[in-house]
Amino acid sequence: MFNRTNSGGFNLGQNVNGKHTAPLSSTDGTVKMHIFLDRSSVEVFGNNGLSVITNQLFPLPSSNGLELYSKGGEVKLKLLNIYPLKSI
Image 1 (tube, rainbow, N blue to C red):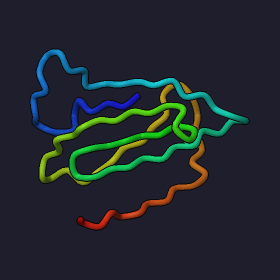
Image 2: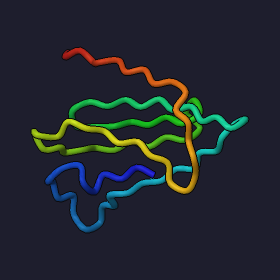
Image 3: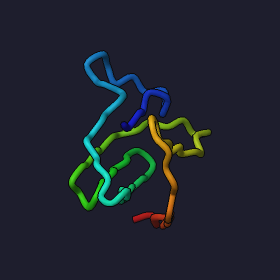
C-alpha cells in the first residue's frame, strides 16, 4: 500500500484517494522493488514492473523522511541502494 495522506499540505479534493494498493506476490520468499523519488513524485515498480504505483506528492519544506514497513508479516531487507538524482 502506498499511503500519502501525511505527505504534505496540498488538498487534492474529496475524489482523490490518499492510499493506493497494487498486488505484489513474492517469488521464493523475495519481493524486488525499484522506487524512484524526486521532490514531488514517487514511482514504485514491484517485481520488475508486474505491479506499479505512481503518485504525486506535495511535501512540506521541512519533510526529510521516507518510511517503508510491512503490514501483517515479517520482512527482512536484503539490499538497499540509494542513488541521488542530479538536477536537470
